[in-house]
Structures are given as C-alpha cells and as structure tokens.
Image (cartoon, rainbow, N blue to C red):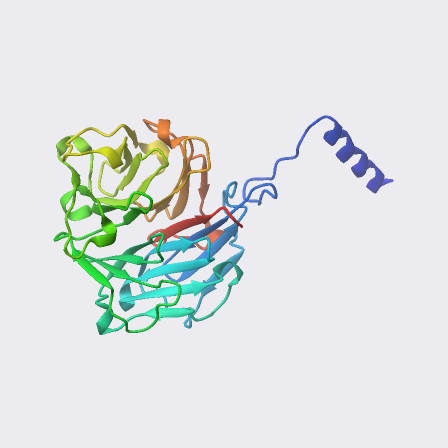
Length: 335
C-alpha cells in the first residue's frame, strides 16, 4: 500500500498544478545550460546552470598533471564548436579543449599555444571573433591568432597591438567590431573600434576615466544586448558598475555609472571575470569572486542599483571552489 499512497500524492499535486521544488544544493532538472568554472587547478562543469545554487558537486572536473594548468586567469567558451580556451598565465600558454562538454578527469588539452614565437608571456583574458580569430590580453598587448579552430604550438600571432597600460579582462562586441578593455592599474575602461584591423600601436576611440566613473581597479568586463557595459571593481568600495550605451559614446566620459551593485548584502569581496546571460530578462550576471570563493549570480542587472543579495551563489566544499581559487566563469546555454 505504501507505493500506492506515494503515487496518489504525486497525481494529486500534479492535478493541483503544484510542483515540488528541489532542495537548495540539488539540481533542478528543468534548468538548462552548462556552467564552467576555472579554479587554480581545475576546470569544473556544473549542469542545470540556470538554477544551480548552493553547495553542489560539479558534474565534471578536468584536473590533474596532464591538464597543465599553471596559475590560469581566464576562460572563453566557443559554444558553437564546444571548445574552451584557457589563458594559462603561469606557463605563458593558451590551452584549448575540444568537445569540452564531454570531458572529465586527468586529460591533456587538445592543443597548446606556447613558445617564443607566440609572444605569450602572461596571458590573462581571451575572446573569439566571428572570423575565428583569437584575441589574447597579455600585459599591455593584445595578441591575435588566426584559425583558432586548429592553431597549435609555437606559432606567431597574425597581429599584435599595444595599449601601453596593463590590461585586465577584455570583451569583444564582434558584430560592431569593438573591443572593450579593462585597465586596472589606471582605473580606466577603453573601447577600441575597428578591432579587426588594429596592429602596432592600439588606438582607443573612447576611454571611460575620471573620478565620477566609480572605477576602482576594474577587472571583469562584459556587455549586454543593449550595449550596457558592466565592469567589476576589485578595490574598495568593491562593486559592479554599469554604463548605458557604451558602444555609442564618442568622447572620454567622466560620468557616473548608470547603476551600481555594492554593499555587504551583495557578498562581493573580490569580483573578477563576468559572464552575462543575455537570454534572461534584463540580464543575469555570473561573477567569479576570488574573495568570496564563489560564483555569485545577480538577476535583473540592467535595473539594479543598490545592495541586492545575489539571487544564487555556488559555493562550499562540495563545489571544489574555494577562496582565492575561482579565476574564470563561462556559460553554455545550448547544451
């Protein structure tokens, strides 16, 4: 009789339109996407990414001596080709993992870009354009490698342009051929137009700089579909600020941000790489926070201004994410 009672309860709840929500820390089978988190010694993958929260174990972990991670600093996910790029700062290299959604364990990367000819020294951030060119922020330079789907070994970049100041994260608006660069040492964000033809000395069209901007060691950077620019600030007062219509600015604006997420309730301590889910209403922002040892997720970010608590937080011993060891984040909504 016990199984019959259980079945009857399930039918009753279904007829009432009720749902049993998963417990915090348990996956939601209705959620979609794969979340990738880069730590100091592993690439972690969490399924049901759009609802993942709490102290949950990753579904896969790429880790071990064969992987070759050495002080990695950022990741970029090519969802179309199921390919993950890692800026492997400590080894002056770029690691490439093909068919990454199927990988787990102590495995070698599919390809490694390294050697004197590459000019790689301390790669920090990378992005891919629509023509399969890989842009890498390394010190003051942006190195561009062609044929990202098969580039391998000790190969020279096809282009190299210098921005004169040390770069943090970069973001490419491939449609408009505009490259955004965080410059943490000078509290500046620059926009480089015509990124596909830049070579030699990089020419910035616009710089967001000045006391009113609220920039304080800007580190992570991303852009939403309405050209609202989001920047993570790594120095007190720690914050995530945004600026409206960043693509259309035509001068060097010392302007206050349009919105600012800051305060104790936000749980922000040392935010780094950002990833924006544009499919969510008004944007859902994933933040890799070194100080919190967590992935913090904020919803409705286009309208946020104040001290909201994160809608979700992935942290705890089971996640394999720890303080000072969460270096990158990316989201695949196609799988």
